Length: 388
Image (cartoon, rainbow, N blue to C red):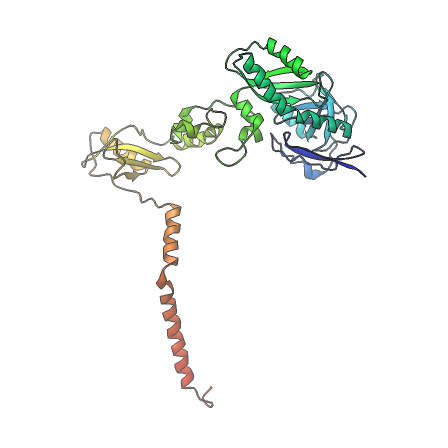
């Protein structure tokens, strides 16, 4: 039996097809907006609807009707309706969870405009699809040359060919309105296909292209993040993050989406914090706020506004006490209740130094020697007849 092995790196998925056109690999190896199927261990449930989620290149997905009642599983490559012709996609979700995804994207399951699934992909469809995928990068590079020659202020970031090689989608970025009517004519003559132009933002482009973030993991926008919310530098200030543009910016040159992830926790933790801009007055002198660890509830003050030397750490309750006394016109003798902060690293370092000491076995060794000597003395006075 001949087998056709299909690996689509730009699609992030792989599938193995036999000569009968049945998929032998039932899993999708990509993580592009992947949805965990927590109903998979319940077996094949009878679904009341015939809608299936199909994934295309990178993060593009769509919902299609399985009008022919095909036995589809996750990872199957199918031919679906397109305009014009047909396209090839990979089944990414089926069953009752599809309805939940449709609610998320605000798509009605009763919508009549949902396109259809024609059939499972045949080997001939796969071969043609592979040819189309191989043409995407050369087409993108040639299209960039054409836009540059026409003097258009735009960047073509990605090209996606349709499965039947009759149409290509060009994703571009531009900060201003672009008249690409002449561009479409030139590209149609050059590539001999139907052209569709789609404008995307910088964040959407990063999600489509993908990559590895500063954390060492796949970009959130290309793996699971579906909604882009506005990110401001105020979220970084709340979390006491350094306002360094190079560290705050992601691969899209915008502020990292992950800055918003924990800002609500910090806002909740700061609700009972005092006003950190106020100066603490004591009999020893004035103390100025320098920094704070919100989650550990530690606030550092120093006696100079622009110096971090000789900082004193206080808890929010003590700061409130001092401010309350200052509000009444009184001053405490000193900033008491200094907190000795010992980090986990320092604790482990101390343990390491103790355990690595040369004399760490001396005490145990001396005890063992004394016990050994006592046993020898006892055995020395024991004779053959004195064993009782």
